[in-house]
Image (cartoon, rainbow, N blue to C red; front, side):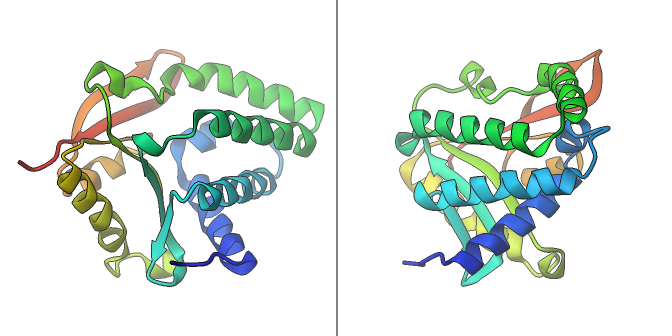
Length: 206
């Protein structure tokens, strides 16, 4: 069992924030905001601590610079999820001035039309495994870190005979996940934003 100390959690938060800065949805949500890096670092630290507390975080061997947050829906903690969202909202209000907060709210209203976490209910019922985020430090990319992170989750889902679900707003991720058996089943679009949500499912091997 890996014990996550303060240093490893801070490393995870740093890599997560860097990853968020590359994500089209986050870039759209933060458009026009001053110093978005500060806000993302605060959010990432909250996400990292929460993932550790909920045992939904796995790292590459003992290297916190590559990690995945994912979980079996049987272990989903909806009440704690709401608490996390409330803390993120509070962090946003504290970090941003009134002008930036107003701008971000406008961005969220527009881009929220292509943001759905419950899309999978249209395709599957019951138990599933959700991948929330996979992030890898730039220094480790191209080393097989992605495969090493996702493979244990895929093997678990196959053993348990449950589908895996994920959503991404980065079109370059589609082929990467398709390589591991995920199928693009839905694309969420809106005339109000160029951002699209790509919804993918991987069914267990028989």
